[in-house]
Length: 257
Image 1 (tube, one colour):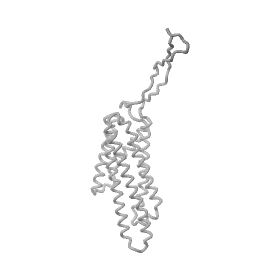
Image 2 (cartoon, one colour):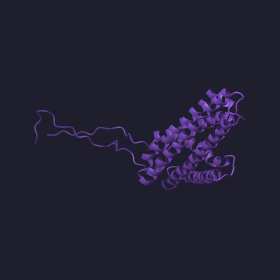
Image 3 (tube, rainbow, N blue to C red):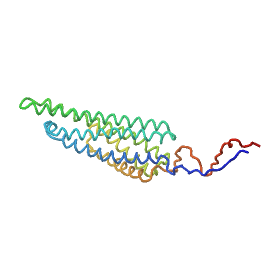
Image 4 (tube, one colour):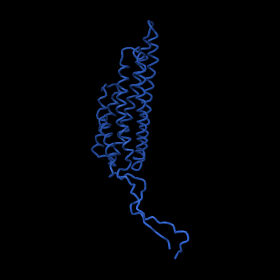
């Protein structure tokens, strides 16, 4: 006779789907803000000097600032990669759009970092030129500074687009409370519009980044502490319930009825 038994298996289903993903995304938001601000302070304190010789004298600090900015490139791309499996069950188009926007954003930041690094040899040439005419080097430094600012603003435009995609999905799926999603939609819309105005020549002193920046700070803490909402019905890997019967094969030599 075939023997059957019921084994009690632990319920491995998590009450918070994609809990680890939420924590990593939250950490990336907070780390990106800290690293980005630190790198920007270093870069602007050197590039804001009246002549390129300051760049040559502080080339190591400038390079450190660029490395900090480059670390945000990896973080921005990681946002799109990590959120892809979270968004895809709800909208594959939104998942692909968010991933693509994040990669474009990271590309513009990388271009900006390269333009800043080119300032170092320009500064060295300016320092070595001595009493000779260096006006062309000053002009080149000014052009490079303008170019890296344009690259930054285009990156922020793309961040605004990515943020609108993400927060619209947050609103639709309630992965986070809808009030947070609305805050994000407003913040990223302001960032997008303000960055476009910056490209057009309006100097907003980066105030357009404040609402979205505060949202990223808050959502980072939220995702680390609470994760995504279970009411969003995120898919999770199949699990065995605590009462799932387990059928054992017949014992060798046992008689079947």
